Length: 157
Image (cartoon, rainbow, N blue to C red; front, side):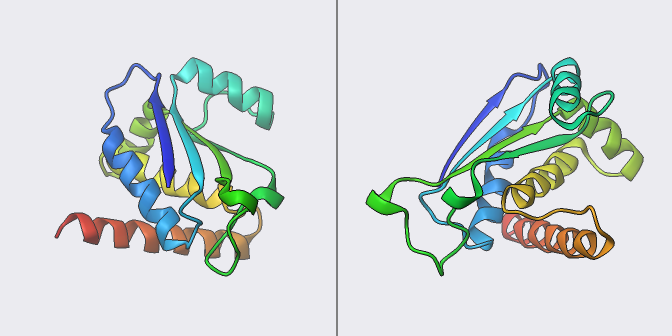
């Protein structure tokens, strides 16, 4: 599993933990080990620009996920590796640590915990999960909670 991370946010972040939770979520979801993922941490201004350009939103958001072409993604062990063993490009997750810190304060947990939650949330979006409809939201958020809980239990050992 190839995961690249770049912190351009100006905020100190434990990028090793962000990488670890992303890898855990992908492993638990049975994603092809040749898959590639990019994680970018950005400042509020850049996240505001991305949110406006790609989502039509106003202001910054916490996480954006940009999946690559659905047809090129190997979603699990039931599928064979792409021809020639080429890595599957899952896509990009963009996180805003400053927005995450504000949400963490409201939620009553640490900014790191919020970034871990948002990372798993972004991974699930890349894998085709959404929360536009109530049933989809229940499924996605339950899966997100399970993945976070299993990751936390492996870290406490």
